[in-house]
Amino acid sequence: MPNPPRTRTAALTATALLVSALLAGCSDDDSGDEDLTAQELSWKDCPAPTQAQGGGGSPSPLPGGGTWQCATMKAPRDWDEPKGDTIELALIRARPSGDDSSRIGSLIFNFGGPGSSGVTTLPSFGQTYEKLRTRYDLVSFDPRGVGRSEPVRCENDQQLDAHFQQDATPDDAAERTELLNTTKEFNAACEENSEGMLPHVRTTDAARDLDLMRQVLGDDKLHYFGISYGTELGGVYAHLFPENVGRAVFDAVVDPTHTPEQNALGQAAGFQLALDNFAEDCASKAEGCPIGSTAADVKERIAKLLKDLDSKPIPGVFPRELTETAATSGILEALYSKDFWQYLTQGLVQAYDGDGTILSTLADSANGRRENGEYSNIIPANVAINCADEKPRYTAEYVERKLPEFRAASNLFGDALAWTMLSCTDWPVAGAADRPAVSAAGSAPILVVGNTGDPATPYEGARKMVRALGKGVGVELTYKGEGHGAYNSKNKCVQDAANGYLLDGTVPAAGTVCS
Image (cartoon, rainbow, N blue to C red):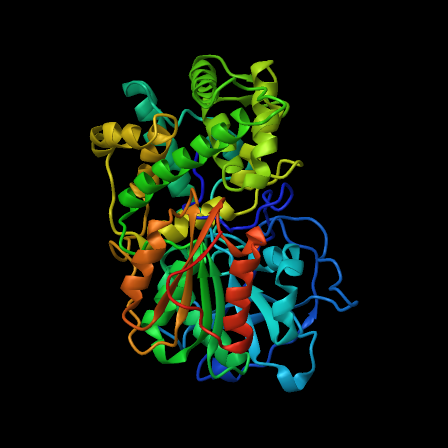
């Protein structure tokens, strides 16, 4: 089913999208009176990523010849019982390229999802953040339930293939029943295969892990760079530990005032805006647009393709077919970044000729499927963290009543995003709250960067995050651009503002606009 993570990391590449990874270990030994803040990490050259992290090879050497180093940190399995059983969280770091006298400390990244492996993501974008390495250890991690950090596990690879092929926009009672049953089966498999971790993957748990990490790394303050869902995690951390916030940047900002329904509705409008911009861009090209003569024509042909695929799929990545569901997922994936618009154009041209390979590959990227058929745990982790966080549980009848509202936001994506509200309906663990608590009176300033063309975390969320953080905490910066996130667009104005704060402590003027 089209189950795009609620928010995704800002910088996407064709290979980085196929995230997956191996299982990580947990220690079931009682930690007794062990002071976890005093633990010493054993940093070593990084191994190849596991299946749950996304697979592939070990990270490439750093500029100048250094290597990425990896370690594991013990954390309580249950933060309500901090002296009980522990789990191991996977960390990665790159040591500073500057001299020790200028070192500020560690800068910890979370790239979003929820469910993205920071251990594999940070090296793939390391060059983008190289300037920040002059004064920081660049650090990221697999949050609990993700990648190598006691990963949530649900269905096997063959079951996931079938799960993501199902009709996720039911047209009648039979299709609706099938969607409900397959969702229930997926959720039951998560409970059966995740070794008791489902109650312990809330964002508040990850925030407490962050504060433990800060202490273990030897920092008085948490210096932090959160992207997408990473902004929600950062906001929750600031709420719990405002006095421990150092220099922090939030990019591609989650709206903390929204319920899950409002998030899904906001994404419907956001992805429709991105599609509108894609269609306008294609139609404006001097050499012509191969998928339509006008922007309206482009969108009409895409809508017809999806309708046709609902009744008659075409060949996709062998031996699977490109269904309406897979094509929708592939289109959504390509709209995360303007860099992917060329692949969306190629994929649509190919699909109109009866070949769904490119769109199917994009859908696989969204779902964490590698070419060898193995899946990462990004979708299981995404569902588990969202459902542990979010209290509302929606019914099929409720979704049906809301369909007109979603279709008004996007006639192309409204149905698909509305039905994703069923993801947590039969989840075995109760959700924590309607909305995350992010008020952070007493925190140091936090730079909050919103992108006017962001499809996954619409621009309005940045301003609402600023207000929710509280007076004197959030500092808003606007980027007039396309795609999910701003810093990784390589816009000099955005990067100079963020770097100036993180490296020199210079807070940009509130309301700064970059274009």
